[in-house]
Length: 325
Ligand code: AVI
Image (cartoon, rainbow, N blue to C red; front, side, top):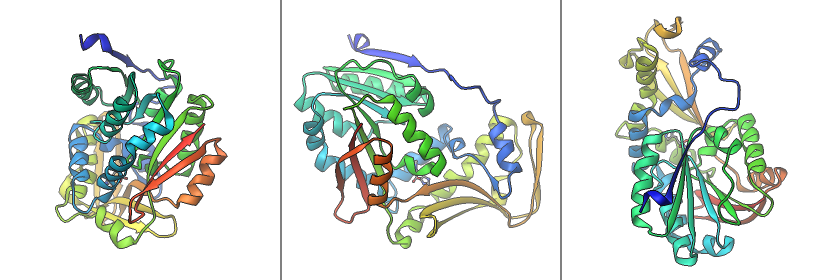
């Protein structure tokens, strides 16, 4: 019975496939060295990220959650009946608040979670179908780019695309522009876009969130190297690197790096690649941009999104924006 309410789509790339690992070689050849943050998320990395979300220093998850707890019903009333499509849904932790609100106010409940990890999508889908007897679910396994380019036709008259957790902050300005352009093309006029963003604040609070006392963020950062080791037969020795995260007050972004503690040559066998790192040299692994709401609203307007409502928490630490295409 639950299966009749469930559909699966595995998305394939419409773009030219880049040979696996090309982005890693490019990053390590770059000066200064970089590694793409998407390699954080193997199974262990995804588990570590879930742990980060529960850390006392990492305020974004629980702050966004509290905003959703307060305003989910208002959001559902604002948009009326619509299909919820979520990019990077993971365990759909926060989205459950929206599903609850939409199930109270609407007869039809349609949810389309999108994630690169098919495993987490399936587990979550089965839980949600069990929890919401009128829910119809269409899980899409693929990247944001694939999903936005290949969204199946909406089952309900209206649609709301959801992008929570300030994941948009992990895109640099160029990537962010490309992303917003894709979202604009994926939505029809009148459809909605719900965006969660971390806001600029005291650097002390920001730096603590990315340098937690238990060292979970450090383990998450270092796990990127462990991931490369198993995926490309690498020889990174994790104890010869240290985690370094700081707030860049000019760019308004947290920057995470891995610092080589010694001079060493690292190799990735299946990529036939070697590189020497000097003692003290760093590899840039992530940016996490922190937003200024009025500037972000202007950017969204430039992409034909009309911000309808902005909700924040009492400290103004996190913002949730409801826009209409
Ligand atoms: C997924 N993303 C929004 C997180 C962030 O805060 O930028 C990833 C993260 N990196 C370190 N801690 C959390």
